[in-house]
Image (cartoon, rainbow, N blue to C red; front, side):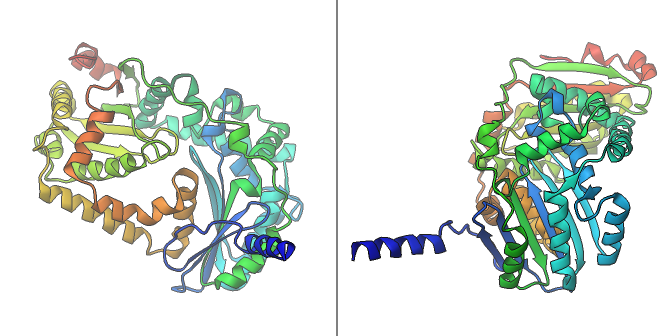
Length: 455
């Protein structure tokens, strides 16, 4: 009898070995024995299916010697593999499937996705399986792709906004800047080898570090069965990559840092300000508050907009926060009126001092911001093919529950929550500030005389 009871318990455990996460309606989840998590989203609006695989990889896994290689790895995904020995065959197969495809690399996620007719689901899953599990890093392919990836970097550098952003990142993250910069380093990109690609694959590209999403006009049980048949024999790493290769903690800023960058391409000045904000590991609630407060500041009726844009001191004054598992940055991005650059900067500093005031925004503005967040969330869910990327971002940088509860938690944000957030992360805290300006304006305006700490 005792043996039978033990057997029954073990059998029950095998059936429900993994705790089911909370997910939205029509979202279904399973975790295979190899650790691969699979989410199926049933959405029958159009006869299409999207499959996406996300890997917990990206800039945050990259020390200086690998800076930008997660991004290059993403590009190489769409090249040769065991089923399609060169890119010509790979692209021909995408055409046969009628697939729309792409990938992205961010700080904490690399994702790959295909959208095609729902009848191609089985073929599409096999196509994804060959690319994610059995890539072939041919030297000739890498020689062609390195300039493409580096070209993205060079195009970004032609934007003065990127130039000042990049300088801010160096000061904001110090020695760990490569772990916040997905685009990478020119030299590392241009000298990458197939051997380095394999190092990334052997560290992070395992089922127990990946999420497969199947979304669209599909039936979840059939989709799970298909995924199990194709991906079930993908071998687990046998270790947690993020325990074996832990991401270093980002040290708080020791001082406030300013700089003025001169550039011939800056036809108008830019100002950027960055703080270390909350993250979902240590202050998940704070990340939600940050979004609501940033939305308040974006209202045309806000004191922030009225003081800077309505009075002609700036043509744009945005405040944003990026939700991340490892220190999300808070950012102010301002395009000052060149004729009033000093007055604009002075007013920014004045407004910052008032951000934690009890009367800085009205109850109506708080409620309006909450409704904007809610409407934006609803709107982004209207396109079925975008649902997969939303849930994979949540899986990599937050959690399924965070995603499910997000709009509800936004509705519960109070004035006191916002005040605590501002005082914890902004008021009196060290930050990085940078401006970019061309030589002629620099001589006329002389921003270094006023764009500095304790002004």
